[in-house]
Image 1 (spheres, helix red, strand yellow):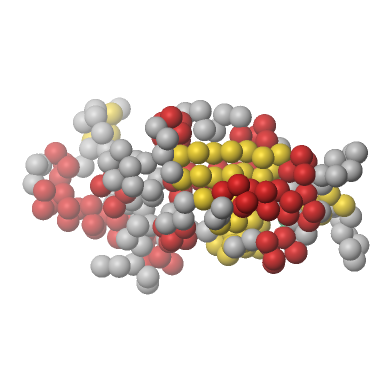
Image 2: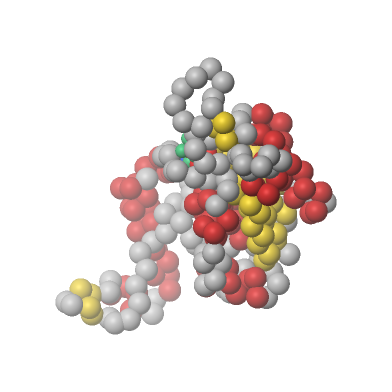
Length: 229
Ligand code: SAM
């Protein structure tokens, strides 16, 4: 079973994302388990303080190390072995290759920051990886945790009904996926490309490969150098 424990100061954020689709199905089938832990429960002062002003001055507040580290230690102890991920725009970029590498792990503790981020000693000494989901700044790590869970979970065998559908997905061979069409054949005058109706599997494969290359060249030329043949 794949297990994610999410550490957050906003546990209600996760009230609905796991109640639909493949994630819900995987939880019901016992393939996936998700626990949400309120970091505030690990504070030891009466105000349940999770943040404080930055040393050296500057705007905003920084998340204190103590409650987060106590929550990480408890989660790791409960799970025996766990991979601890801290989300941060300063982290290494999380991409499909990282998702595939990490999908071999079974237990994760996902740490969501807020405010100006987390005291640097947490990622430095208590995390296995510090990851960024992209070159932009979110208000919190909760959305990043969802992105992480969705992308890692779908790589676990059996999570997606038809594992074959993963093989041709965008990024899996270093290219974007070819365009997909379904019925109706004509929609408001827009036709499905005739080759897809030809029944000629070789021609369809060739068209898909060409489209995949064309789309990648147009939209993500940076991927082309690394693409596998
Ligand atoms: N002051 C920080 C900086 O400039 O690097 C930004 C902190 S951000 C407002 C608050 C939290 O959102 C972070 O601690 C992190 O958990 C999360 N976050 C924001 N952008 C992210 C990204 N691109 N990837 C992963 N987590 C992100």
